Amino acid sequence: TRALSHMEGGVLQNIADFGQGAGHYHVNEPDGKGPGMGDFDFTPVLSALKDARFLNWVSAEPFQYDPDPVTVARTALETLKTAESRVN
Image (cartoon, rainbow, N blue to C red):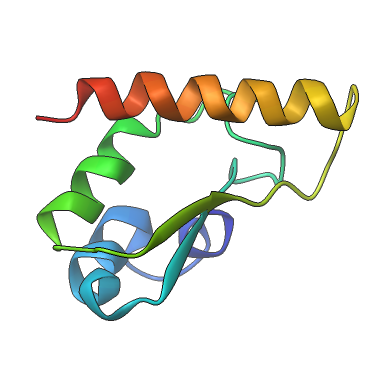
């Protein structure tokens, strides 16, 4: 998500264009924090991946582990579970 947020077209358009062919997708906040450690909404991302018929792995890839790795991992998991529950 971080890389796509800096690319022309943005996150959702790049997923629509290239998502089906992607081997994996890393979720993180645009500033490099883990999912849920910022304000980014991952529901549209997971929805776009579903719409693109992406069938591979989605994994959290934080570049910052504040306040600690366990908290970052737990927050990422809960954030993604919540986002997934909102995808039709």
